[in-house]
Amino acid sequence: MSATTNAMFLIEGEEWKAAVDGFEHAIDLVKFIRQQYGDYFSITVAGYPEGHPDGYLADKISYEEELANLKAKVDAGADVIITQMFFDVDLFLKFVKKCRDAGIMVPIVPGILPLMSYNGFQKMTGFCKTAVPPELSEALEQVKGDDAAVKDLGIRYGVDMCRKILKSGLCPGIHFYTLNTENSVMAMVDALGFVSSTEAIRSLPFRKSTFDPRRTERVRPIYWANRFKSYLFRTTNWEKYPEIQWTNGAARMFLDPPKENILNNVDATPEAAKKLLEHYGEVRVLSAQRMERKTPQANRSLQSRVYRF
Image (tube, rainbow, N blue to C red; front, side, top):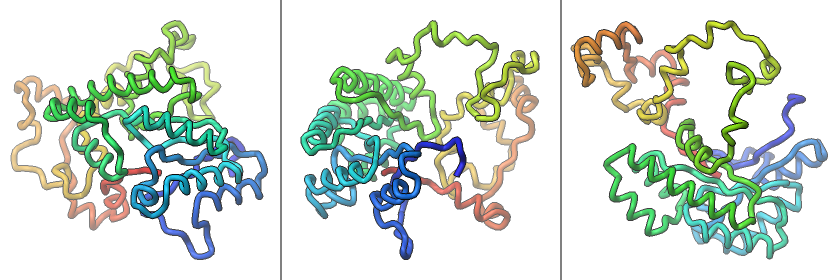
């Protein structure tokens, strides 16, 4: 175990199955960590304001039994609770109060997922059996054909949720689910004023790395500041193309390319297309069939995945 790791978030994996003679529930892992390592690790566990999709929401146990299970995890040594995503703030605040009434006194941090796309929202809420307030559902239906408008709605709605939660005084902070697309989250962070304009001014001419071996660096080559067409710059807006990030082997990006150059399909003038070609190089498309034969593990890793706890 790395000496720099001192916090753990214990959640259920996708399609998780208990191993023979292994841990069957999160509480088993919490107990094991406390028995083996004492208080060295800070342990965070999952909470479900609306109920677990495979528990209360599946009519397998009562809501009170779910709260009892959560309290058992806390009594076993959990320090913090982070919740499943939700969109009904009143329901979340009731959950916090029920936890307190049940004797669960550790910090409860709300999990906030910004809306990224209409289809993604429908899949996630359906998969997690998340309740959607009527006002959000109606607003979303009006802009569902406009991805930019959906994101703007998600940012505004998320900011309102966070403000209401923080105003309640029941939670110490917010946990954001980025799903590898941080732009909406950063827009919410800015709107909420989590980072003041004075604190945002860096004393160094570059953004410090979060990678441990480079945290203390103070000098970088001066030409780095002038790399306008750097990799980071060129990939800033990649989240506009969700198929690149969450897709499967049957998506269009894995089909064999058409006879004409892909750049010809870009809505751009010949001069603009030429500049794109010079900037990015020749376009190459790897078919799903070729990937299957060459790297089946990589192909499996690109299968569509939705994570929850």
